[in-house]
Amino acid sequence: MTRGRHSLAPQKPRNRRVALLAAPLVTSAVVGVGVVASGSTGPTSFDVTAAAGDVGTAAPTERVIAASRDQDRTAVTRLIDPKVTGRMWTTADLDLRATPTETARVLGEIDGVSRVAVTGVRSAGYAQIVIRRSGDRTVAWVTADYLVAKKPVDPADLGLSNAPCPDSSVERGLTSGAVRVYRSVCHAFPAITRYGGWDAHGEHSSGKALDIMTSDVGVGNSIAAFLQSHAAELDIFDVIWRQHIWTTQRAGDGWRSMPNRGSATANHYDHVHVSVY
Image 1 (cartoon, one colour):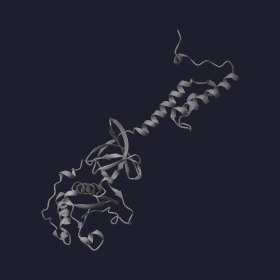
Image 2 (cartoon, one colour):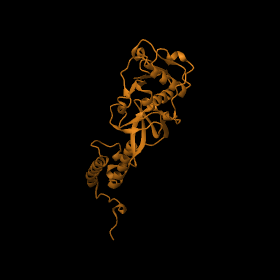
Image 3 (cartoon, one colour):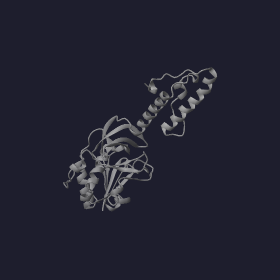
């Protein structure tokens, strides 16, 4: 009966000269197969010489190849199927990017107030998440500032109010549309006590703009999402928050980055700006 190859012990070389000639050939074959198995043209991280032992002993080739493939498979798995370390909630609709860069290919979009699996890996302001698409696990990157540990209130569940707010002085110089935005935000987010209304610069000089003062990322995200979800009802033109702008005219483009204006206030890191038509 023929014995299987894994049951055969390696044969001893007939003499030292044959052993010395055969060992380099075995090592070369192993390295070549290991490179093919890894799909790379360069050397793998696996130390073939250490695994084979002394070249004079000519260790079984298939064992070295198997070990190399196992290591390569583990490395690839970590890259394309990273370990989930927890779950977080989105506070706004977010683009799913292929890499952690603003110019990366967009794979799709995930809704606000959605629970997502995170890996704990962050890069350049983006967080790595794992989602299921058509039954398969997909790795994607989203803006890290729009992830929170506690489930946020769905902005769509916060109704609009036109009742007067405690600080009526904010309404001075504002158009009726901007006043309605102020009153709606004031009642939906009573913890916010500071606002910027009319002044002589930019959109504010028209009376159509309002600044909602907060540096809390989670709160600001919720306010921005609230304004987005009620944009049609409030006749909103744009929303600016943390150096990003969203407009109703280009709603499909999502949040777009803005150039650096030199300060936290100018870049809207300490307030959400909103204007109406």
